[in-house]
Image 1: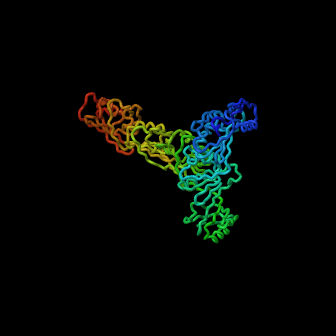
Image 2 (image 1 turned 45 degrees about the vertical axis):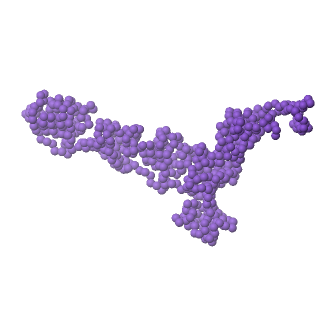
Image 3 (image 1 turned 30 degrees about the vertical axis):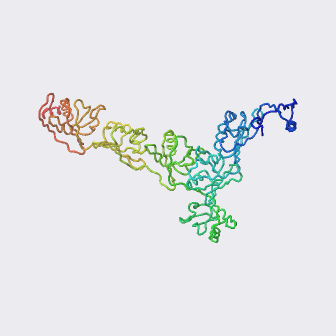
Length: 622
């Protein structure tokens, strides 16, 4: 048309004016067309139009960028680029009421952002925009019209699609999905077809995800999509296999016939499994057999063993892809949308929008939950697991191990284990009596060494002191007092499987301690000077042990004292309080023989008070 670009849809006719002064105004459509035809040979005609939007119009967008900007509410065309293939067809101000794609997928009443995304995702195909003037006609309510059926070839590799429900429906697609623009959100997968002709129909989301995962490296796969309301949508989970010639390696039983065994040598072992029920057998001439018992199936397959055009349809009594024995899944930092039940916590339901819908499978059980860098949680009940997942939802790098409880043993806490502790703070929280490992600080060096839930049965210090049956508070105090030591060892036990030690403190057989000058903050008692109490601020708190006997005291000048009573020892210690490097020999009176009383003096030191044997006796008598 010579008027293309000058007149646009929606312009309203006012008048037609000829060069000789003749005027045509207030004409109807028929009269205007007639007047234009009658004056077609005249030069200098002019037409006067009022710029206006049409009530509605439709425009086909060719493949490629539409070159338009849609914005606002309702979604209005606010700009048409100069390079747009629609620049002579579209009018700024029209509202995009609906978008129809080449497969029949149509959206009505959607937002500007949704329309822009839809046009971009489908640039490879023609698209039809249905436009309206909102001041002249009402806009459509929000709705989606799905195509009646759509076949989509899918590439090898991951699809980036989340499926949900039964039958499996397309719930979500990633931005980088290779089938974005081909799959339609909300459509159901009627069947999944392998390149060898195997066809899975009526699959649940879990079954479909399993089948896709098993064939992830296979080219030539295809899916048939249908609206979830389609009357032809498969309602029963089935597998259709093309039967090769020869022995199939299948064993059947029952009425109707059920596969009871698939031989390891069967060419169909990756497609069929024990438990599937035979629905139909079709021969290469088109003859179909239904409602068969095991004997019928064996006879038909045997009689046609040399045929290559047969197929068999089976109803899946169990999931097509059996549960894996074990799998490890990294957890996102968001709610999982998964329900667990029992002990071990077994997956009973997966929400359609779950971010782990493609990884989790109903029937698998949570075996271990591993935090980044440790710790590892195991033998959890469902309430414990749910609380832990909730408390750590913001932690990146969590990993859960899932196992099939029917085929794989769940991880158990060890019955007992011995752990050598490094020097310094451990960053471990122990609670209760006996002390239970319950939590770790972020900088704890023990996160990957101590299993959560085990209890501390015994602590062995560097000097051989053994402490058993203490509380979490007591344990924390003793560990803190000995944090300088790299020779501490913990014996941990599983209280469910091992008997715990009774409360006791077992000092080492003997030890030598060099004591500083000044007050020791230690109390002694008895005929043989026995450590009875150690003050919290004592400089030898970490070296002395309650219950040990001071068998020998050696002064820097070489003088030695053995077999002293509590009073005698205190007097000597007070008298030598100004001296550094005094040496105390401590022994365990239950395991070691005590020395006889004796004093060996070398040289006296100023300020040093020493009692002789007679004064000691008098002191004791008094």
